[in-house]
Image (cartoon, rainbow, N blue to C red; front, side, top):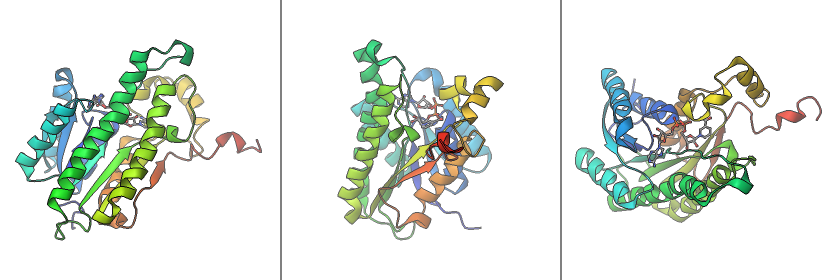
Amino acid sequence: MEKKLQNQTAIITGSSSGIGAGVAKALAREGANVVINYPVEHVRQDAENILAEIKSNGGHGITSRCDVSKEDEVKAMFDETIKEFGTVDILINNAGLQKDAPFDQMTLDQWNFVLSVNLTGQFLCSREAIREFLRRGIRPEVSMAAGKIICMSSVHEVIPWAGHANYAASKGGIMLLMKSIAQEFAWKKIRINSICPGAIQTPINKQAWETPEALSELLTLIPYQRIGIPDDIGKAAIWLASDDSDYVNGASIFVDGGMTLYPGFTTNG
Ligand code: NAD
């Protein structure tokens, strides 16, 4: 069967764990060369393990250390990728983290840390990707678009989240960053969209699913009555990265089991 992303190269930021790792495996399944990005040396082995799994299934890729909040490191990751594979076709802006605190106790460092990785990181990586897409233009033999960017946002780009103001602000910021650059570069045939995951079982939200009590509490927020898995996001990413979604641009795609459906109103409010 023909693979949807054959001869394309994808950088997936923060892909040594969780959703990023799931997306990397999914894109590799469809034939993409994948760049498994990790931020610091102590998670390098995790990145190598993900790459080894991908290669054992016939996929191709490299690992690349880069803190997405650092301009010089982002440029170096793109340079390394282009040197290895010739170009970049797909960017998955996935790296993200939380530093939670009640708002009146939130430090400037906690605020800046989350905004610098979750939002500035997406700015720096998107800018580098767009520069490469503009330089290269369309390769009709691989895709109708000159390049695709998928921003990992969250249901919290629309659901306010007490105790997590820095995180929710970063995701709200991603929404208008994504839509603004989608508008700016559509005429260059660059497509930019977001995936907004609901609750996906990963290290970031372990406390929300690690005990049966926590999981049952979480399920009250999910009409579809199951927690998501990284491959739920991987499948959406394949679609958004492929020409199957060629007319989709500037969209926030919610992959959340209905979390944004105001579940509190299910029994008439
Ligand atoms: P995770 O903690 O497993 O993944 C986050 C990844 O980002 C890690 O691999 C981490 O090493 C990497 N990272 C952190 N700082 C970085 C930096 N400066 N540079 C590069 N990489 C960095 O958690 P996850 O759930 O897989 O989260 C992935 C993305 O999905 C995040 O943007 C998160 O906000 C978003 N998200 C997750 C959920 C969920 O329920 N799990 C829901 C909505 C959105």
